[in-house]
Structures are given as C-alpha cells and as structure tokens.
Image (cartoon, rainbow, N blue to C red; front, side):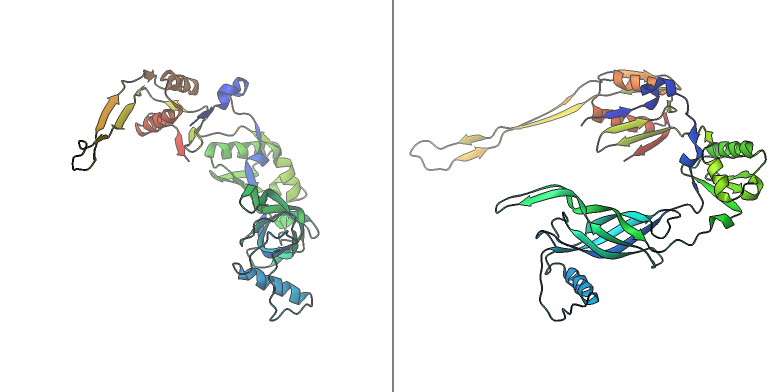
Length: 365
C-alpha cells in the first residue's frame, strides 16, 4: 500500500500563514439555498438493453400509463419490449431559479437494464419534498460508460446504467421566497469557529461603519439589513460577500486507510515522545513425508505431517525522539527517520494519538 502525505505548509512555503478568503466562500446566507427534486420516469429507444419486463413489472405499469395518456389503449395487451427502462431522475433547483430556467438532471436505472446509452427520457415531472411539481425533465441521455456482450463473454466499462442530461429540465414553478422582505439575515459558517465568526463580524462592521453584524454563536452571524442603509438585502449581501478575512483552522490529521493518504495541517503539534518500531515475523512451513510399505508387503501409503514453526522478532529499526511542541516539519522528519513502511506510518500516528501526545483532531476514514 502506498501512502501519500499532503502538507500544504511545506509544499507552499510562501503561504505558510492563512490566506485571506472571501466571506462568500466561508458562509451560507440564510434562505439562499437549493432544493432537491426527484421524479420517476421512463427511458425509451434503448438498443435491447432495457428492463426485462418479467423482472421489473413497474416498468410495464409506467409504460402503460404513458401510452394511456397519449390515447393508446393497451389494457389486456401483452407487450414485452426490451428497449425501455424505468429510471429515477434527480436534480437540484438553484436558489432564485425562475420559471423557464433550465436545470441539469441525473438519470439512474432502477430495474435490470444493462445500459441507458442512446436512450431518451420521456417527459418526467420532478417533485420537491412538499410533493409539488417544480420542474419537468426530458431529453437524450449521455451515459457514463459503455458495455458490450457476446455469446460467451461481456465487458463493461464505467457505469452505463446512469447518465445525465445537461439542461434537461425546465423550471415550471418558483420557490416562494421573498428576500427583499427580510430585515435580518443570518450568515451560517460552513466550518463553525468562534474566532472566524468574530472576524466576520468585525469585517462587516468596519465596512458599514456601525454595528450591523452580531456573532450569535460559533456558526452564526446575524446581519441587520436596516443598519446597512442599503436599498435592499441583495445589495447588502453583494457588498458583504466579497469582503476577505483570514479564517482560523483547527489542527487536524486525516487518515484514509483504504488509499493510504495522510493529510496534516500546519498547526499540528506533538508533545515530547519517543517512537520505536519493530516487526514480528511468523513462519510456518509444511513438509509432509510419504511413508510407503516395502515391495510385495501388505499395507498402505501413509502421509506423515511435518510442520516447522518459528517466530522472529526484529529489534526496533530506529528510535526517534520528537521534542516537545514539535512543528509539522519536525513531525514528518521524525516519522521518516524511522524508515518504516507506509502501513506502519499510519499505525504510528494512531499510537501517538492514543498516548495523548498528538495535539490535533485525529480523523480516520
């Protein structure tokens, strides 16, 4: 397993300090948000890669409903085409999206269809959590993979049972939200922190020359629209979102055991600790022996088991002592001095954290 250690403070020495970040990249404005939409539809025009009707009866049901709405009576008919597939259609309704705006949609098969490549989504209403229809989707699907099948083998690349339709949905209903009527707007920090919230409050108050912003907690800053003396809340937010501050970051170490990735921030500190790493090797060898009777003698061949087991413990490869309050660069140098494998490096970080010497939030995925 390969390990990748990402340390931005070491890779970019000139950016060791926190860089100024726009407020719009740190917070979400109260009420300015998207809404999830979902719909159940039918894809047609597949080249024999659709649902098997016997295994997906809901496909036959929706196909019959669509044909009935188009004036085709299929009651009691037996039709089992292989060029249709039942799908779920998802999209996100953007903030302040107006009637007639277009949205990107994602289409995913829910039956046993093999591929949606080349299919066309039939008009599908998209509902929000309140059950109302806010958009209608239709169009040709761009599948994310390909598949081929022969008499004795098949090959699949990517995920051909899911695809997208760029600008495939049209907004039919708008979200009832009047931003202009708000007298107070809350700014929700994406990463709650008291220091960062305080800096946002200070920057806004300095911009308008009076106390129009108030930090309510580590994740919320309230903005008094009336105190800004702007014509509308939209003008006030447009002036605020481009203000820059230096956000405060928590010391954090993130370890992904599956990919072997270790990411550490520049504020990570380690107390005085010594680390010794060694290996324990267990060897078991089987060398069975076959014992046969003498020629012309009565008897059977017997397998006599012979097992050799041994345990070898290598001494500590190195003992690395990390001074008290070591910085990130010193921590990495100390780990590299051990000469350990990538897998052992993750185990060492876990042990240092368990010993209480790692002064950072330790996140393991």
